[in-house]
Image (cartoon, rainbow, N blue to C red; front, side, top):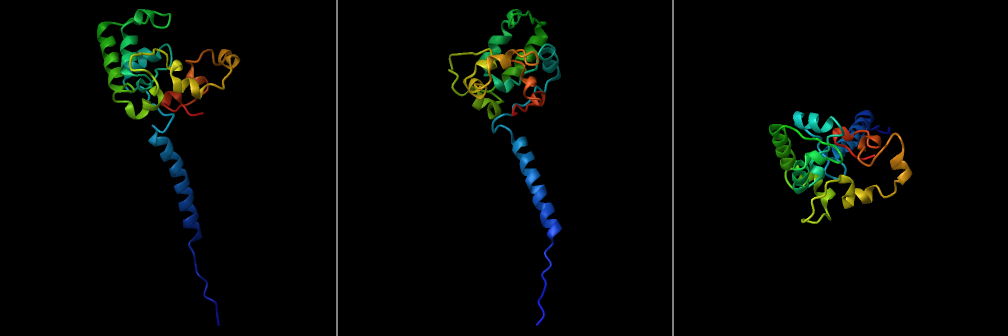
Length: 168
């Protein structure tokens, strides 16, 4: 009696598993909202005006009340005068409001603002409870390192921060 050899399409199965594996990685990253993705600023005026001095932080990182407070006092923007003409200020404020963590950016910023009192309007992302927990193991010496400089310099550690990815 002769044994019958089964031909299993080995290569297509392996190729399919490899594609599935890498698709899973990409899908996990693309789904975002799962932790460390915050859509980067899409409005070119907002990106230019805010990003001219620092990373244009995603609007979904703070609640609307924080952006309103910040935009209401641009003369005292963290020690600098960031005043703009009325039309530009209004455009930026509208964008930030529409995409804030408790507005259009809920899918992404909800986790970051969890634990922030409704009465508070924090101005610093670095003072949010989740941010503090996520960065608790970083020493003060690491924050002061020349290549980092401050807690607001996200791109020093998160190389894809400008694209919205803050995982390491």
